[in-house]
Image (cartoon, rainbow, N blue to C red; front, side, top):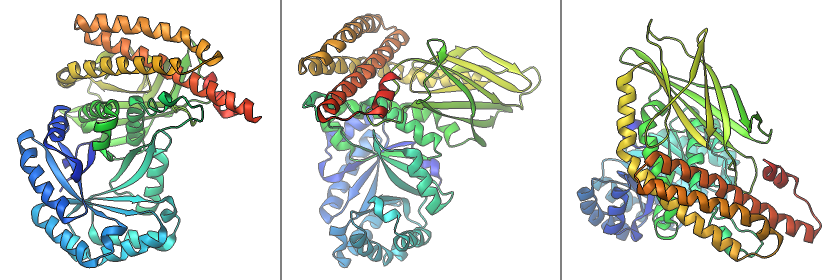
Length: 494
């Protein structure tokens, strides 16, 4: 079984809450695979019914045995469940879940007794564990031994959105498991501020967080990401669910490079500017080059992500200029490559300079996370153009709906505030209103590229508004409590 049998973005759902309508929505939004949690006989019976529906929508439902403390209290129950799941599916996944180290020792012991039944059948082993487990040498030795015995194709670890660190989670997993096929589960967490402005918590995290965390996982060498409890997002945060569908569509296009590259290396030579000046030192940048050699030509994708190491948003609030320099050689004589920014609805040609095997290219309006395709092969460019155009209309629809939703949220937030914080943000709201008008005009004329660009510019303003509000509210409480937040001010100034 090859790792490429799984898409890059995979949803995990609770079997007990999934309906035929949920499966239809998954297919409608471009998902073709989902992990279905199974922790009881009733879950398994329901999954069998769901699979008959899933086939009609072209969906693959992979059972996920949830080895939690409750289930493992009965050795007989977990044994019977594993037998039943393996009897209905050629490939399964397993989640090891434990809140406390002491409880997890029981979980580990019970699962270890099932090694002979599970060996070779586990596609993915998900370690949904309390952080303390990773610092317990005995437990980690047991997990490593279990992993070697079960022989899973993939191992998944957790990080949280928007306040986690995918790269740190992956480095921790690599330290414990070596160079295996590692995944990251992007667990969505809300953000609460002590301001009493409840609408603000409905805005964080936003769709951009999922995209930036997906890119951060890619650039941290993850083979894929899982979005846990996607059924809850579908019910309570449709904006994040739809953002995940767009991230999934983008990942499908990038997958041959992100997973199939014959050479991967970090890009260390880059410059970030804002308004013609070097950007603030608090910004962080990560960029990698993924090189393939197909049809006799060297082709490459340069992927980059930009973020802030602060607790409020972690997202840049403006537009930046990015210059990348990277040595790529191997093109045939007379086959001069071209560079294209892979931004929906279609690739956009970029100016590029070549000197002594060094490629220099600039993205004048870099936005959070971007990829650039470099190739001398026009059929490859045309194929990418076709793939992006195939989903361009749905991406535009998402961007427009997302911007409209965020505009209403922004107005609701400001209406709930009083005083100086509200006054400072009113001007930005007027700018956002003008961008919304331009976006809707372009969308009505079906000018997808213009509509998406206006939506992205709106989102920059929206992120800036959220950052202003978070900083202003935090400062007001810091002043009230006699404190000061230097890190927050650094983020606000950026």
